[in-house]
Image 1 (cartoon, protein in one colour):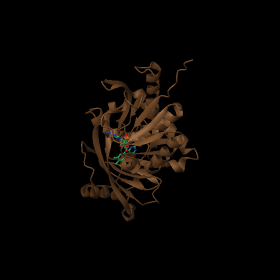
Image 2: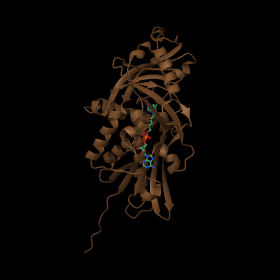
Image 3: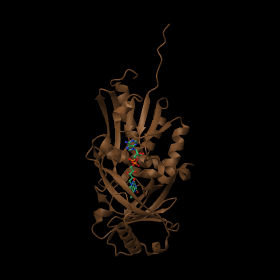
Length: 345
Ligand SMILES: Cc1cc2nc3c(=O)[nH]c(=O)nc-3n(C[C@H](O)[C@H](O)[C@H](O)COP(=O)(O)OP(=O)(O)OC[C@H]3O[C@@H](n4cnc5c(N)ncnc54)[C@H](O)[C@@H]3O)c2cc1C
């Protein structure tokens, strides 16, 4: 008697930043019988995710395909981090609550955030008194409470959880997505800026950022002001920034940027002058005007590859990764049920 052998579906998550790792964990949770492998050429400290300030705050220009999809990603992400924050994993995963102010002298609109208002526990206008707590003669301000995720803790935690649940890791550079056809039925492409080359996606643009990581454990509030000035505490350090340089690939620390960052941050919080600087760091935000989370069936002489793209989170990848991960897994399951072009399905 001939018994047909069932082969488990094999899935590759390309990328081990916050987008790749949240996607890998979501796959283990929703498709536990699939064989899931994370492939990347950079892990932990070598990723962009590692240096992010990690505050849960989508910019008002953060966008998915539609406003409804964008809102759902942000809602699902907040629920994910809030559940972690309320669990006994919070400390290991580096998830904490933080309150803060956002100030502007230009307009009220700058300090509002349509994606956070109504989602986080507090988002309100700063009082007249609060506008004068910090130097700057601020005309407009908001006070908020949100979450902050320290990727220096989150990425190792996520990696541990992934491997513990049966996931595997490969360290290698992928030159062409089609080279993954031999080994995998599906790929979730979480390659961040790497997608520019892998998908010939010219809409992917780096937005260079430079920050200081300082020791100021006394600083418990997050502060934002004009000209990309921010001071954001998380569990292992305080991130002081910053800058946004569109289309710059320069990964070296610029002394001019450091001086400008210090000048603006010290003006906002003079006590910061005495805080020792642990390190200076540069990262390239993987920006795309619309974050790409969509399926694609790629065909070539090498075979057929079913891909779900999940990249282009720009300056808001920590904020939005769990929500886009959930959406990407939903799309993958739809491709799976449609059985597009693969006998194993
Ligand atoms: C200064 C700064 C501050 C920030 N602060 C915040 C913040 O407060 N809040 C927030 O939400 N976001 C913040 N961000 C943005 C956040 O860091 C990014 O959105 C996020 O890290 C993107 O994650 P990712 O997983 O897509 O990319 P990455 O972390 O860059 O990971 C990409 C992965 O893909 C792999 N890869 C790529 N190409 C290939 C290939 N060809 N072969 C094999 N592997 C490949 C890499 O090895 C890596 O593992 C900040 C960014 C910067 C620069």
